[in-house]
Image (cartoon, rainbow, N blue to C red):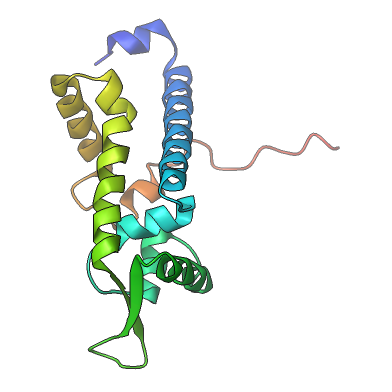
Length: 169
């Protein structure tokens, strides 16, 4: 079934416009998140880590949530501890491992940052409640029924089977 947007431009062009808009949105979100983190004296990585810690969280688990190397989490943990936002505690299941746990101050700052970030997100400032509900429904549809299993990262079928030949003859 052809949709109105498909008539306005070719499907490939429409897909490229969607991709460009999503990339621009992600950049805007990153900039906004870093800006708000700076307002609280944190860099972007520290603020994101603060958001990802939802209870005792192992350093390895935090690195997976952040999509970064475990050695970088040590730098983040040092910074969060320096700001009095988190502390390292031995894991109850394996004393060789350390968990990051938010302090009372860390939880308060985390809640403030989340409130600030969500209030300034583009969907809160540009969309009404009904449009936000529609956006959420579309995002969930794109993420699919099995979220968190690289389904979205794998995407659909390949469009081409080979990489174009180099123009360097």
